[in-house]
Amino acid sequence: MELILANSNREDITDISSFANADFDINKEMKFKVQVARSYYTQDMTFGSWIYIPDTEFGGIIENVVTDTTLDYVELAGRTPRGKLAKRIIQPAAGQDYRTVSGDAHEIMRTFINGNYSGYLSVGENIRVNINSFTFQRYCTTYDGLISMLKSLNRKMVCTFVKKTNQPVYVDVSSEPIVDYSDRIELSNDNRINFKLDDNRMGVNHLIALGKGELKDRTVIHKYLDRNKKISASQVYTGYEECTEIYDFSSAEVAELNTKAEEKIMELANTSNFEMDVEKLNLDVKLGDIVGGRDYLTGISDRREISNIIYTISNRTISKTYKLGD
Image (cartoon, rainbow, N blue to C red; front, side):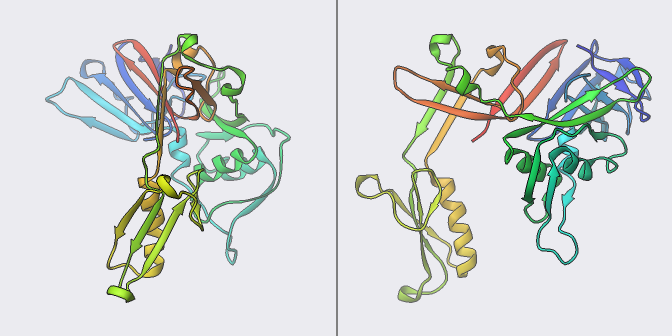
């Protein structure tokens, strides 16, 4: 494994893996940090320089330098490629309510990426996957918008630091089909893969929200959840299954109370937590792919999307942690 330091012209300088500790959080914090002992620090480790692992998406441009003379290291930090995409906004054209696109998925991605990141990010060849029409949410980030667009095609975004001979390094942004490993491989404790399933059905499914007003004139809104944990117009859980709470927001008008009540009932709803040691699967699992597990003793099963990958180098030891989404 190489951890490369490159200059602001995207030219490699040296491999720093033998004396640096690093942490890359690619899709939650969307940041990286690298700690270098003060005795190894050079003037090349500065703003605009690159730190990356070739053929992966672990890396970024140095945008933050922290030095503390009471510590024996200097910390270098910046955003991951996805973090850069998350700091641009897709705006509707003047006079339009929404931004709507059509055509090849990669060609659409190229219009938002190529030429907008000084060569840092670049979308390659088209994939011949056509979108008849896709409408972005108003003023969403470029990242959220493109992820939603790709998901509508059952595809995931892939970012890769590419270094070719005599060419500056760059991040290739592309897409691949989402792989559902829960359909291909039924993972259970029989496979010697440990996981934890916590299926908690003690949550609230009926919320009575109280807003402005007094006594009979007080604003009252009822919110219900269906069995798919979606807001329902009518009551689904009745009898012993009904679980009700009061939400008191006495200063709220109807519109605000309606919004806040929906947020509140989702906070109080049933929860299902699934944890799995994905690293032991020995599969080429990527961000956006799906894994699942089943406990034959209880009959409980679950499947989740890989929502984040954290790559850590500490004292030359590498670890990779996979986070599962909702």
